[in-house]
Length: 599
Image (cartoon, rainbow, N blue to C red; front, side, top):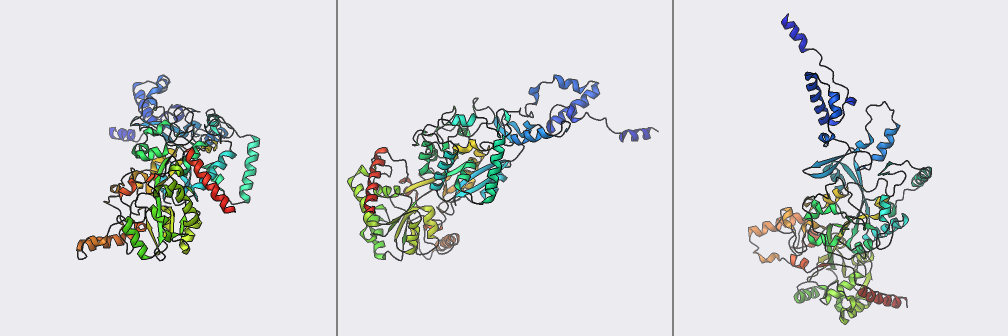
């Protein structure tokens, strides 16, 4: 009889716990805490419900949901609207404030989203690998990115102007009016006071735009920029974009981010600008840890230029390239190539003015490249404050280049002229030159021996981001972090596709990030005959180099993983905005050329 009673007690149903809606607090931690408390109270003969009424809320801070109107997510408006349509007795409907949690990891404020956030990116064509679109979601695990492309930096800048002017964001030089755009509560969008339902006029306009979108499949750059959270812009267009209020500065929280701390100073300076005229300024110093002022939970990544906490950081450089020369080996006499090698040790800027190259030069990248070539040929900096007035020789070389040497100056036609053989030498960015040279064996690519012109592609946040549905994406900072990680560095292809900014400090290239001691294709100027031909080690090294390059490779071939030596980059420079005096003088020369052409 005792065994039967014990067997019956072991199969008896446990005492039922109170329903979840009676227990304040949600989540596994809160439920486990309430279950333990209920069981303890049941044993002690006390009521758990009475304890919950007097329990302090500070003991649940790690699991407490954020109140309505605080730290709004991009999906909060949708949650608020749908929760209001559910029946009042529907117990499983989550509160609208449950779209976001305010957490802390190692004392650093962080945000957890109940819904996947989205990020809209407009990148320059071929400036990022296609797999980044899928890898970003796997790395962040809390959102996805949608990437569209633009043809050239000039197209991106033009679309920025169109989108800003159409939305009324273009406000001149000082960014006046950005605060009003940021703080204004608009119908149909989530804001500090919750979700405001759209008006009838907005619904009618949305229906009209939907019908118009269905009637045509064409999507122009204006539409891309208007929806974008992050845009890729050439550094040469960063100054006018900042001066015209087309892009927004990053707030002070980025100074604590990992990507800003590991970014070399040369790149931090390139992205730091004066918000009045867009000129470069000294970058703010990185902050190693969060202070008391930044421990305030989630903060936006972008702010108004005149808002408290705004920094001078407007851009995040993520890759760079340089200006290269490409020449036709079947057009230039070998005797002339040997003479250039004997006199200068290789092609350099003064060689563009040789009489043998009359009407044989093709230039890309705009008229600024011609001025840079004239200045560099006379041992001046490309950013000389006096510009063409630095020397009479510079002015004379500009006229000689335009009237005698230059065949074509156009971003599209210069490559075609070189391919057809009409031009013998082309001067352009490494992206275009290397892509063209890999299609034919008749071209050889060289870097100016005395130094070249560097350029960079920069991530910026358009000023139209606050006009988007839901405002700026919370993944903007994550995108900056992802695209500047050391793991994104790929130096095995050399200059092809651009070089990551984290691998270059302005003087030396860090090949150790790819566990390399040098470029896969060798340095420019290396001679294979320096070692004995019967050496087994030399034969093996040549075999490995050729296998990596994809065939027979000349040491230092820029099209097959070769790279210039560090001393070339140490003598190179980025283009900065011209001074007003230099701009006026150069524009006068261009007007003179235009008048002579019309005659």
